[in-house]
Image (cartoon, rainbow, N blue to C red; front, side):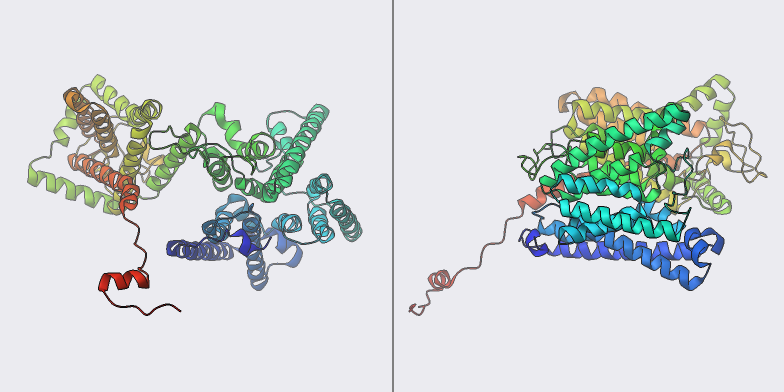
Length: 614
């Protein structure tokens, strides 16, 4: 089917063209950034693979990086080209640059680019032979060449056979045998090459690597691995054949590739690209469920697995094996929809009162916390600037006669029980209370949950902007002013690492106070959930932000003006959330432009005599 036919024939709005152009610019910027970052590294720290074959040379390195980036672009275009028909016009414009952008930020692609390994080439050859090349035998030859570079891709040969492409399967087997014989003769003892990862290392995201990391070894481990590999291959091929017969060729290839990743004894990072390609599958009947799988697949290949799970020792094996888990889910577990399903093109609308998908919300919360911590940790200014801003805040508060932090801090520090209670309050309630309220809203009030979550996200975003623009030393880190750090004791300001907390977070992220901001968000959400005639008991909830304000000042973590800043970002967060929530309703309220009047209608309106039609 021609690509013009696959576009669905619909007209494309101007914003789609602009968005596609912007995505291509982003892709170009990402490619330039990767190339510049890589080529600036010392010669011994980049492109270790090509240097072993060709030697270290700046021109050769630049050519290798350029070729690899072109390979990534071709892989993205091939994936977009393989989407099942019919492809909407908007998707046809946005999918190619979007796929290239995702590949350029994917961790396996960046690692492969840095090491200089040609691992993406067999993936592209197999994908092109399966999706793009006309003629079974020619496509099979490409798949065979790709399998010669990465033997586990021979799993595509039975896929060709089982889907009726027997000439392609024969061509693939013949091409593999010929290329393998040539390589074996030319490189005795060096073919087939094994990925550079250690078999029991975290980089080996295969069943064999996972079993070794769990402590299994010897003949028992090998027997268990072979049994699991056979089961995965059998189930994955069965599913891939079904998807291929349903004209979901890209999904069939991704399912097979994910199985190949799982059963490879020592898997390379580039093989995790199959997980990203599996995002083309559609799973879930509701609109709220449809984004879960593609978001999960994208996050697995973009972020480290440890980012997606809480830092708990019991969950560490899950985090370090997340790519393998995602590959197994794609190959054997996730129930992708057939194109004949009634909800394939039109999922059931959840509506504003529908409950969001819990798994998606947990993923977004976890990733949001990672982004918050990462941004907060990198927003630190230098010590002199932060302390100068601290003096500015104190001078302003003295002028306003609101400099109450010193007296309050010494009163708290003088009562050990009170200091301990406030320190516990400061560290325990900051995340626990907002998460509890979000969970309650998700279960009992889904419609209100969306607005509250959006307001909290904007509040946090505005707070992060404040951290970047105005690094501020909190009272406990202001030398010579006598403030007492109730949690960590006296500070040695001559030590560049002074303050225990400075080792794990940004010590100058004080303006605004998100402790106060988030507590005020909690009070406002609870107050708004009460019926209008019974809101007066909800006023008691505002004791929470007031008490939080006292705590952050009593423990010398914030100034009073930081608390005011927290109030400001909460107000901005609710305002931004309200504006975003109203946007769909405003678009729906705009009347469609009236069609231009025909000549007969213009004549009737003006009284003009129109010429008779012949």
